[in-house]
Amino acid sequence: MTSKEIRQSFKDFFASKDHQVVPSAPMVIKDDPTLMFTNAGMNQFKDIILGNAPVKYPRVADSQKCLRVSGKHNDLEEVGHDTYHHTMFEMLGNWSFGDYFKKEAIAWAWEYLVEVLKLDPDRLYATVFEGSPEEKLERDNEAAGYWQHYLPNERIIDGNKKDNFWEMGDTGPCGPCSEIHIDIRSEEERAKVDGLLLVNQSHPQVIEIWNLVFMQYNRKADGSLEPLPAKVIDTGMGFERLTMAVQGKTSNYDTDVFQPIIAKIGEITGVAYGNDTRKDIAKRVIADHIRTIAFSITDGQLPSNAKAGYVIRRILRRAVRYGYTFLNMHDAFMHKLVPTLIDVMGDAYPELEVQKTLIEKVIKEEENAFLRTLETGIRLLDKEIAEHKGSDRNELEGGIAFQLYDTFGFPLDLTELILREHGMSVDHKGFNVEMQKQKERARNAAAVETGDWVKVRDGGTEFVGYDETECETQVIRYRKVKQGILPGCPFQVAVLCRNGRPDRR
Ligand code: SER
View (tube, helix red, strand yellow):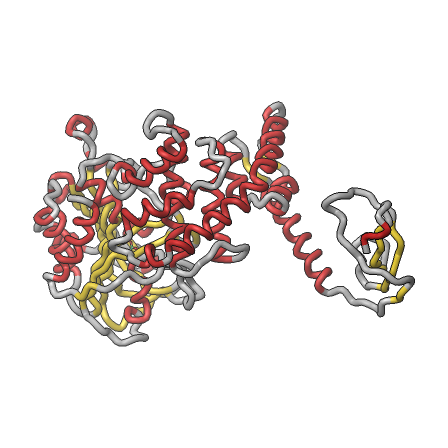
C-alpha cells in the first residue's frame, strides 16, 4: 500500500465503525495558553473531553498534523539521528466521547492492524498501565483482560507512569494507556533476541506504533486528579511509523512519505543518500524540517523572534546549517523542496497548494537572511572549538554563545548542537547573564529621559557608517539624557559629518 492508501484506509475503517471523519485542526494553536502547537490529535477535542463544550459527534476519526518540539512532548534532538522520530508527524486517531470504551478501542485497533493492514500478529505487543500507589491508581486489569483475547499473556507487558499514563501537558486531560508496539526486525535477529526484551528500550526496530488512551481524569494545577465528566477514548497512531511497518522498511525515511523529498535533496545537492552517515543525517533532518516549516507557515505561523515564531526560525536555521556544513549548500535551497512536499502531502492537506507561493517566499527569505551571517558565525565557532580542543575546557563561554546568538543569529540550541558534535557544551549560566544584561540595556534604552534639544548650528545628519569607520564631525545640536549610550556621557548629540564631503547635506 502507498502512504496515501494507508491514510485513507484508516479513515475508511473508522467510518465503517460509525465514526465521523473530521479534518485535521491547524498545527499552530492560537487560543490555548498551555500549548503553542498541536502535539496530539486530542488537542482539538480538549474542551469536549473536559466537558466544557458539547459533543457534536460521539465517535470521531482523523489524521492530525502534530508538532513535538517544545514543552512536555519534545523529540527534536532525536530527529534525523534516528530513523523514527520527527518534529512534525501525522497522528491517525479515533475518539469516543462518552460512547464506547476500552473493549471496542482494543478490538478495533487489532482488527485494523491485523485484518485490514495484514501486519503479522506475532510481531505485536501491548503494554498496560502497572498502576501507581502515589496516585492511588491500580493496574489496568481491564485492558489486560481484553488484550488476552488477541495476545498470549507474555506479550502483554506492564508499563510505568512515564510510558503508560498519558498526559497532554502539566495540566489537562489524562489517563492510563495501552500502547501497541511492533517488532520489524529480520527473522534472524528475532531468533537471536526475544522482542519482548526490546519493547520500550529505544530499539529503532521495536517501536510503539499506536497509543490507546483511556481518558478518565483531568490533572489540575495543584497536581491532583479529578474524574472527567465522561470516559473518553483517545487513540493516536504514528502514521510515518505505521507506513514503515506496512511497506516493510526499517526507517520512516525509506517510505514513500520521505523518499521523494530525500531524492529531491539529492538532486539539488548532488549528494546521494546512503553512502555517508553524516550526510544522511543532514538529509533526514532537512526532509523532516521542511515539513514542519511549510505546515507552520500554512497554518499562519511565520518565523520570528519570539515564542512560536522563534521555534520555527530555530528549526529552519538548524536545517540550513545541516545543509551548509554537510551538504555544502551555501545558497538558499530549502524553498525548492516545497513542490515535492506538495506532491507527497497535498492530497491530504490541500492548504499546502493554496499557500505555495507564500511558503516558498518566506522560506527563501529566511534562508537568505541566515546565510548572510552563518559563515562568519561558523568561522568564529570553529576557531573557539579549535582553541578549546587544545585545552581541557570543553565548555564554550556564555559570552561567545551570546555573541553568536545576538550578532550572527545562532539560536542557542544550534550552537549546542554544533558543540555536541565536538564533545563540547555551552556555559548556560554565562549565556543567561549576557541575555539578562541585554534585556536591561533594552529596558534602559526604552526608558531614556531627555531634556530639550539645544541647537548649535544649522544642518542635518546622515549615516555614513557603511562607508566610513572614522569621520570629522561638528555638533549641530545636543540634549541631556538621563542614560547616555556611552558610559559617563549624559548627552545625546546630533553631528554633521565633515569628512572632506561638506557638500553632502
Ligand atoms: N493522546 C495520545 C498521544 O498523543 C493518543 O492519541 O499519544
